[in-house]
Image (cartoon, rainbow, N blue to C red; front, side, top):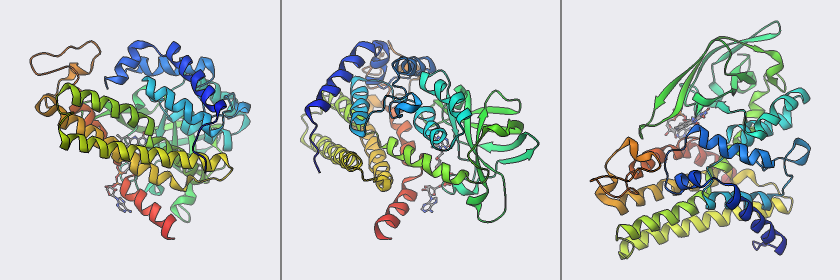
Length: 392
Ligand SMILES: Cc1cc2nc3c(=O)[nH]c(=O)nc-3n(C[C@H](O)[C@H](O)[C@H](O)COP(=O)(O)OP(=O)(O)OC[C@H]3O[C@@H](n4cnc5c(N)ncnc54)[C@H](O)[C@@H]3O)c2cc1C
């Protein structure tokens, strides 16, 4: 296993770094470096800049309009974007549904949906979870009944991230109750402007509107929007989840946030406290270890071995690290991290009597990060999967 980059790979990294430095809007990177609220416009502006260059689908093969990069190039691209302060690309379109459409969609579906995903124009949401169907995803109850050229969809999805912006949603729906629960699921692409769809906000611990409930009441969906075969949706769903869990590890963001933690610790005069330094060192070691694990996966893939079996491990360690740095930031700022000020998430807010501007968003980040060990498949469930893979 060779974890060193070749001169060509280093030149590629330099090229990406220069392009990102020139094209990433400064107001957006300022928000990212300081964990401030990103609007829909911020996220979509960056998506469209990437899309114009043909990089919003940076992992896509050339035949579908992607750059056709190998696994190392993809890794370097993600790292350079994260370190420069680019927003995390909203994954539902380019990272999740696009690979499913490429692998299992019809040529018409590919032609219709992939260009809008690549350009960043069309916003996708993920409609997997339901009340009572999260970890036990195969129990989804949202029903799709075939009537002529349409499916009539009825039911409810839960926790739909940024679904308030969604143009389209990909959904797991029940098309049969025969046999095992997994064998009666289908994968449908649904236009969120269809009559009968209601999106209701769920306000989370951090006071933000990030997730939603989505209700379907007699929603007509053309049968052409079925991906692959009816009742084979579970196969496509699992294919997509492997992509989701690897993405969630987000080691590059952890590296950037480690630097932010150090900045806060220095500003709050705890960087020289030995016990605190010890905590930062432990976190740094864990981040380096996670990065090594990611590089090992990449190295294996480069040499032709598929090793997505570790997706669960990456998800567990990555999410724990995300929670840990948000905790240490809170500790560094001490009482100054406690005020919960909604306006403090806006760029330009300078703080008032309650403390320095960099402390104010910390509580919000801390609360938001509680999600990481739950979403994308809870860590307890991931541990079950990892133990099955390792122990058989
Ligand atoms: C912020 C956020 C955003 C999300 N975004 C989306 C989205 O965009 N689209 C989408 O489809 N879903 C989304 N989800 C849903 C997410 O995937 C589920 O919350 C997750 O799969 C857990 O399901 P659940 O919430 O129903 O909890 P449950 O499955 O009810 O689990 C409750 C608890 O029991 C534990 N548990 C359950 N089964 C087992 C087991 N077999 N062994 C051990 N422990 C177990 C779990 O670990 C958890 O602690 C999001 C969730 C959050 C919190």
